Every structure is written in structure tokens, then in C-alpha cells.
Length: 447
Image 1: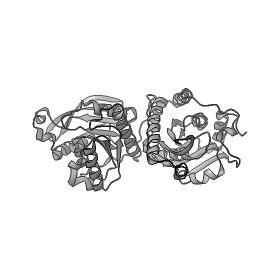
Image 2: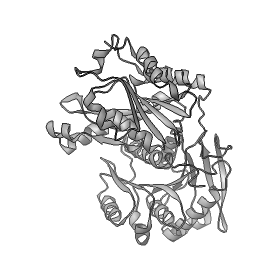
Image 3: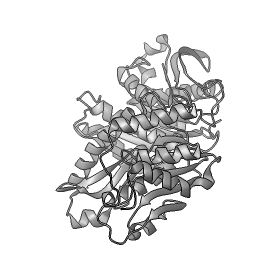
Image 4: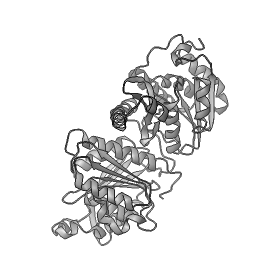
């Protein structure tokens, strides 16, 4: 035995990392067992503590065997060797991943409560677990930290098999491991007390660390204005010669802002868009829902399908938004639904638009046809699996795009995502995409 329990392991790990005390460092613990270890490290280094939520993808007939891992921000690591040896089909892998993504989202909400995710851009991040077995979750965690803008990633663990350390050097700038025994059958064999860590213990560790650092419920983005959040008010937007109505919501320490472009026959009051916006707000992203047309303009149905007009309104609104002190300096993303997705892509293709990410939900990107190849913003196309016509149009549109893009199909969803759980899944996909591409923007890239 090398360690009495996780607290003992954390204290000993902190001794090895003592040279980092007083530097701009953030400690990320892997739930659940890694968090008590990380809490000891954070306390010793007088550093901020957060969770890095990762879920193991267990093989269908041997769940304890990791065939990969997934994490926040859409990070996905697959062990092709295990998948091949276990003869896991693509459908089986997809089913496991779908189930684990739902649990990942639940745990992230449960662990943080109303506290936003810590801003790690430009910082040194120490990823901590209670030990490494296959290395899949540790690899995913390092990639999450990198995607969120960490300047330097250190992976620190009490114990790991020696053959698993070398492959992890591709994802971490530095590895700290106290023990690398050759007789390795499982992490628990090196602890006297390796009892399961509960969700309640994880939440207690995080709450205690937040209280200690004075950061409970508040982590200001380094790129945001000092006036940033919390803010939730109706606003009047100057867009060219007209004034449009909207609602601007800015959580404390927002990492970015998402502007919504609704579809035909909808408005800023769309319950579907509001559900997505609330999910983004809980994740620490600001949102602007606004009406693309005045009440008089809505009477002419031709305006509803005028992609050029709607895109121009979106562009004007974005210029207005960037002057607001509440969100000045925050990176901007677009969320478009139905015909609003075409407007979002058209506006994102404008020279100098500086849109950091686009998400289309049940969208018609084909209506932005001549502009698709000019879009440079990373784009996520979310389509219902039971919406075959729109799915085909999205596939054709994606083939014309030259930017980073992904087509995500929500099984069983029709065009409006009215089936149970489908809209929530779309919201989760959108949240992960925006967090990955907005929260990782260095400095005031959108200012």
C-alpha cells in the first residue's frame, strides 16, 4: 500500500507541486474520486478548484473496461484497440456515448450548482485524479483543459502503471506521478481506504474551496468588461433605421455571448429558444434573444424568408451588442433555428464578422447557399433523426462548407424537437459546442 486514503494521496501530491504555490494556477479534479485528492492540492497551493467532468465509455458487456471517454466541450477519446478486441459496433458505441453524455450533463449541473465553470484561459491547469488505470479519462480531461484555453496543462496523479504514462505525454505538458508500480491490477490496490466517493462529498469539496477562495458564484472572465454580469433585462436594439426588441442576459463572469436568430413565425419569446438560452446561461454564457423584424415588418411574409434582410439585422445587432458595457470584449457566437440558421451563417460569412461559433438547430443552412463556402466560424448542425428532408439539406450544405463543421443527429426528433428529451439533447449539444469554441478564445478576440 502506498496511500492511506485520498486525502493522504492529495497531501503528498501537493508536496511534489509546492513550487507552483503563488502562481496563477487552477486545479481540476476528476469526479468523483479525483476531487478529494484535488481539493488537498488546491488548498496547499492556495489555488482555485473546479471539476473536470469526464465519463468513461464502458464496453457493453464489460462496463468496467474503458473503450474511451467523453468530456465537457464535446471532447471524445476512443480506444480503438479495446473497441476492436471487444467487437463493439458503431451503434453500440453510439448508444453508450448517448447514455453517458446525459449523465455527464447531470453531474456537471449537480456538482457546480449555481457556480459558473472557472475561466482557465491563459492559466496553468493541474488535472488531478486518484490514479490512472487505462488513461482514457485522464487523456480526455487534458484535452478539455486545452480546449478551454489553458496555457499549460499538468497531469498529476498519485499512482499509475508505467506503460500508461508515456502515451499521456501527448496531451499534457508535464506529468507528475508519485508511484508507477509494475504489479498493477487496479488503482484501489494501492490505498488502504478506497471507499467510493459520493456526489455529496464532491459538492462539499467544491463548496468549501469556493468559500476559501472567496470565489463562490463568481469567476470573472479575463476578457470581459468589469461591468460584466449579472444582468437580465429587456433591451431596445438599434439596427440600421429600425429599433428591435430583445432580452439580454449576462451571468456573472460570462465566458462569451450567444446571439439567437429565430426561425419563421417565431420571436424572441420562442419557448424552444428560451430553453436553449437558459441552458447556456447556467453554463456561464450570456445570451441575446431578439426580434429580427418589427411588428409591422412581420405582417409581410416575404420578410420572414428574406435571408439577406435577416442577416443584415443580425450583423447590425452584433455591432450594437459589442458596444454594450455588460458584454464588451466577450467572444460572440450565433444560434440559429429554422430559417434563422441561414441568416446566422450568412452574417457569420461577412468580412470582419469575427463570429467564434455557429449552431444551427433544425436549420435551413441551404438558404445561405452562396455564402456557405465563405463561412469560417466552427459550425454545428443539429438535426432531428425523424426530419429526413431537412437532414438531407443539412448534409448537402455541410458538403459545401470549408470551415470546421459537425452534423449531430438527435434520434427520434422531428423538425421542432417536440419529442420528450430531444430539445434538451439539442440544448446540451449547443452548450458543449459554444463552451468549446467561445470559452477557449484567448484574450478579447471578439472585442
